Image (cartoon, rainbow, N blue to C red; front, side, top):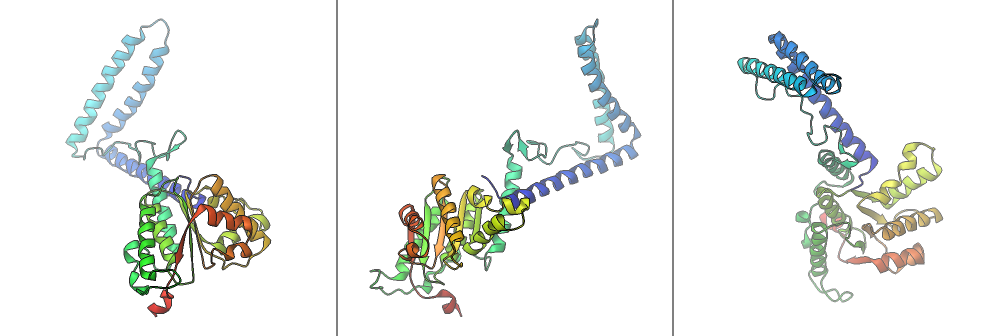
Length: 327
């Protein structure tokens, strides 16, 4: 689950901070115990020495290493027993002087070999969730808050059913999509006039999918194109050069408000590059647009329109502008 560099950087910083804090707590506990019982300091020093002596005995010539290691083991056990007696007599709670890392599986490093540890993955999930929250308008984007009452309940001759009934089916399918999301999920195209709930439902999906631990990038089309422009034409910094990668690597990409940007040859090329690359790599994408499926060809290109219409599942939104109704 390839998280964006920003999410990963913040998660790593939190893990490092937690590990540093754990080490500082241990050092404080150790100093408190040593000050109260100086013998503990000497015991810990001797325990460290016996470990080194055991290694040396294993390589010493002209001496039975088994006998030497057995003697050191007995010495070590006696020291540990004395240490336990002192800690018990001092009333220290269990584990007070245990130098346990913040995560026992990875030792607080965040990785087990080349695999991301569950501790770092959970921090990434939390950071991504916070990042998505800052992008949404109300912070209340959830399927439970999606109200069908704003959609007319009378049959629209253009679609043969009422907008409310249509949106009820759309809501059900979006819920199922988010609940069953996997790396093999299909891509979606949300098409309809402004204020009909496309952004809201996209945000609902983003929240639920991200909460399941998948990496999600949610971005307006304008901001996406701006990142690619910064990488292509902006200052040649490492940060600018890495900006586009999150759009290719994330588990789910959501492009909001396609069609509101100023269309140029560069934006057309960029859109094709993102859509085609993710399609060939079987990475799910959700695109929401005020454009009709038929106008995608004239606005962008036949190649882009073909991919959006041919490989994306289309959801068309009908009704009245909810923002105006809410006013």
